[in-house]
Amino acid sequence: MPHRPLPRCRVVRNLIARCAVAAFVAAVPGARGLADDDRESAAATAARTGTPHEGESVMIHGLATVIYHVPDLDHAKAWYAAAFRTEPYFDQPFYVGFEVGGFELGLMPDGEAGTSGPQALWGVADASAALARAVELGATPLDPLQDVGDGIRVCAVRDPFGNRIGFIENPHFDVAKVR
Image (cartoon, rainbow, N blue to C red; front, side):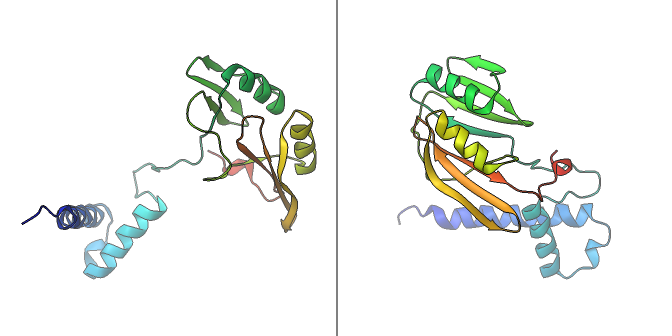
C-alpha cells in the first residue's frame, strides 16, 4: 500500500490540538468547567487572536520590517534614503536597513521585485505630497490617490526597481498603539 502522509499529518494536527486544549485548561482558571467543545473553541480563539493568558507575553507584536528586493543595492540605497529622508542604520552587501517611524525598511539584492503579494502602506501625514515626492524622485504612479472614506486616503507608486510602495494618510491611526 502506498505511503499516505495526509492521515499522519491529521493525526499530528489532532495531537497538537489536544495538547493546546490541555495547556489552555491548565492555564485558565475555570476552564475545566467548560464543555469540551467550548474549551477547544476558547483555545483556538486564544491562539488565533494572540491574546495572552495571564503571565504570558504576546506572540506577535505587530509589523516590524518590510523588505524590498532590488537589482542594484547601491542605487536603491541612495533612492530610498532620498525618498524616506533617512540614512541606513545597517549597511552590508547582503542587506541594507532603514529605520522609518519605528519600523524597518529593508533592501535585499536578491529575489525579484514586484507589485503583487502583500501590500505594505507607509503612514504619512499627506498622501498627496508623498505621492508627488516619490514621482519626483523617479517612481511611477501605480494606484492613484483615492479617498477610501472617513478621511483616509491611499495611493501607491512603483519604485525605480519595480516594487510597489504604498502610502496611507489615516487621521484615525493611533501612534500610541504601536509597540
